[in-house]
Length: 524
Image (cartoon, rainbow, N blue to C red; front, side, top):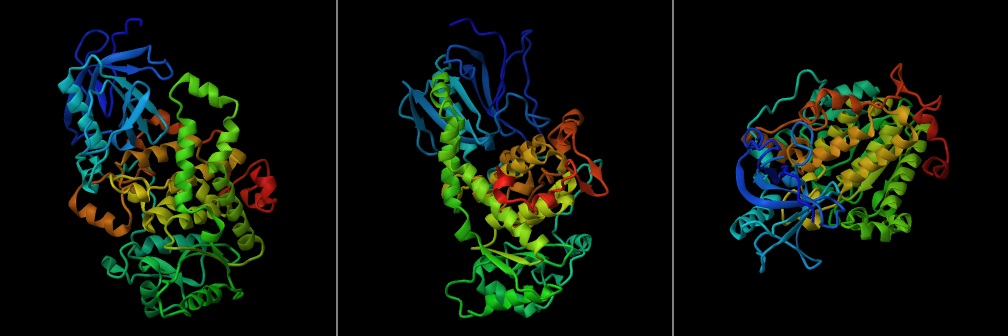
């Protein structure tokens, strides 16, 4: 093997040692970061180098996080999905509390962003290697939510004033402003959930049909799944609306309550049209199906050797089809187009039903609004959409992203699936969006970092409780300067976007016009 160049690498995990000129290199720590352990003489293999080429240096583990927070060679602890011991071509998954029975000579780290990092510890002192591996496994798989680095960060936790801020929908006036922007009629903001006294996973303020009284909503909260109730998402200029509704509890004695809620949606329509109701459970893949599909996609997209690449290259598209990930994208876009047609062309309100209205409901609601509302295709509008439909309305980011070890059964990349659907629309109508695919990638990186409060919690109640105990960084989707420098931020906007009179245009074809096309033509 050729002699390795004298260089260093970092990892979060992070490597440090000496620079090329022989001077010691000190790690650049964020406020609150601590160095945990260091292992010397670690060889980091070059990807697809058949473990014949690598970079020699020290592997240093510390409690944080490419961009302004993370170096180009860093591995974010929370971004680590699995750690494997590799011996004689066989892999063994390492988990907390179960030590390795043999000396670990090769280490393979799989990340949530589909990267694979390989290290050789053959030249590393045995005690250093053991400490390093135990530390990596322990800190990449925290047993409690408050062990994430976000709770240890001691730097600036406030949004940057130079960047336009978006509503967080944690108060009455944020919802009023959104309804005013859309000129929504037949709905009202209610504040009956102050201090989350009636529902932990709904915000303190939310929007419901105007004909419902506070007592009606309180009754709904105790009879619908997870103490939720039908809530407003969007109103079209023709008066039709989009409403999210959870399932009625199986043991509820109020069997006519759902019909009452649907009647309230009907009354909110200017022509009092009965709404169209879609049960997402019957039309879309389950949460478990999506996770299984994602695991197959990871295997396909994460080859470890050139031989693996060559063996799958000829059949790659058929293997991609077999994962059923693209089928999930297709069914979501097709359903969203159907709902758009009902709302914009036929003037019907639409109610989307899901067990607790926290997973596929925000996904479908956002896609429908992206197709109907040009504002949501701006950077600020998209940020507001994510805050409203995902963060404020209680998507289970902590469980679905697997931020805490022991919740693997709840993992499912619903938010990644949403971003992929948006990416598909972006490829078809690039000038209809202000933002680029780099912006979408940055949002997913932010979710994987486990640092920003937007993507740390399961509900608004958890969010508020944590804020009272520690300083959290707000705005992974809005304070982008925390991630990227000004030159990089310029790539967030697509260079071919045209913004004219508050509406994006694509060669004379607006996104609204595209919805009149047949699904096969639009989604091909």
